[in-house]
Length: 179
Image 1 (cartoon, rainbow, N blue to C red):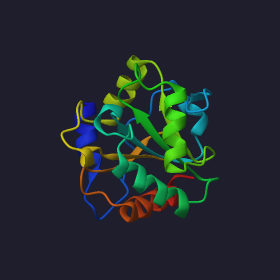
Image 2: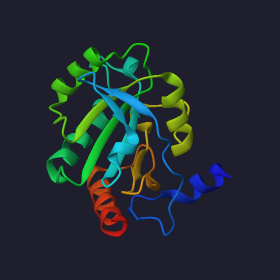
Image 3: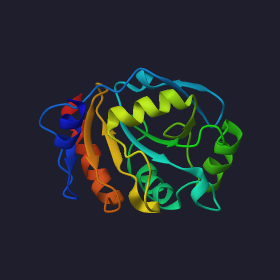
């Protein structure tokens, strides 16, 4: 059933919000780059943009393509209505201290953009719920998942072709309809 719902929420680069909400994001708690516990349920009321990254793929430790897109989004979205989450696929390696160095490298503002780690089972549960691929094939292969203010998956920009402009458009449309 979830696979059918996920298939229905994938959008093209035209960035269209869904007519009906997708699955509810599980109520899990992760750890941010400051070592703070972050219950995903605490983000209700905001539109949340989520991407996963494997830290073993680049010298910087994280996907620079995704980080560049998130930096654009951080600069163009108001912080009070949105959250940007980059979640490691390598929680055994990516401690909060290591994530802090990524955050500093890319200039993330922790009020809006967080790098998260935590228990692998919780990260895997979130990835399965959102429909994230098990393994990336290339650096740009991570989709962007947009969760509405009620905590439901509301859109997905597919791997390799999502642009920060498409993400900005999709996020603002979802925000306008989910409050």
